[in-house]
Length: 191
Image 1: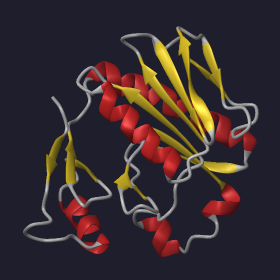
Image 2: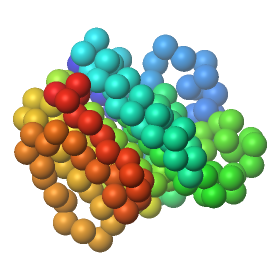
Image 3: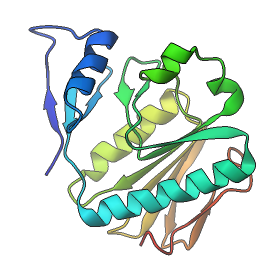
């Protein structure tokens, strides 16, 4: 099942507060919002993708707990990007010093901050082209390092600020170098 996009602008424009309330009132649904204000309704993942997402988040969380320089998030966290989009990467990490600049209210709702690091895991129903566009949007909004994992082709696309996209074929691991020093994502259980 693919994501479903609804253009509400001709009828209404949701404020940030209204979008947050819509998400809270429909907790069984996962929403994102494009920079144009389009409402994106995300389908739930299947069992395999959910398990692989959990394994990715587990690795990021374990490293974060050991490292102590940042805070990690799972796929249920929605961030307000500088371009106006509201996005929920499959896994994300933010430097603690940046996170601590937010108020308690900002932290409680959809934090108005772009993560430093994100991971997206392509599910069987996802469009590669749409996922690549999303990764470029992440980088354009301030993400320093992004990983797009395509289990079907066993490829990892690495997105970095100011550097061409790097594509790895069937890597056993991927390093978080330069952003998450010492973090290595083990892909053995992801493939």
